[in-house]
Picture 1 (cartoon, rainbow, N blue to C red):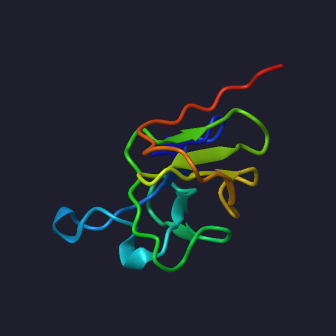
Picture 2: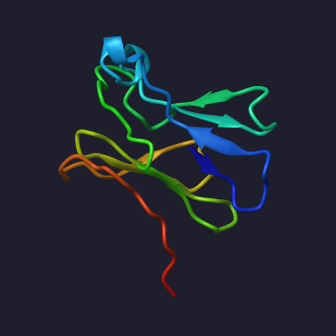
Amino acid sequence: MGTHPRDAATAWVVPLSHPEEGRYAPGGALAVWRTRDRGDSWERHGAGLPQEHAYVGVLREALSVDHRDPAGIYFGTSTGQLYGSVDEGVSWQVVTENLPAIWGVQAIEVD
C-alpha cells in the first residue's frame, strides 16, 4: 500500500488473489486500486497495465509514491516489470520489463 503525500484519505494498493490461488493479479488482469475516502470505496485503474495473462505478483514493499504534484506511483512485479504513473494512478506506463523479480521499490527525487 502507498499513501498520498498530502492527502491522508488517499491510498493505492495492488490486490492479489488468495494464497491457494497463487498470489497473482486476480484473473490475470493487473490493476491498481485507489481510495480517496480512507478505504470506504475503491476505484480500479488498469489503463496501460496488462489485462490478460498477467500472472504476476507485487510484494508489499514493491509499491512507492513520490512527493510530486500530482503524485507519481511506482510498483514492481515478481517477473521483473517496473510500472509508473504520473497522474496519481489513473494510467500506467511500463518503465522497464527486463529486471529480475522486484522485491522493493523506493521513489526518490533527484535535483
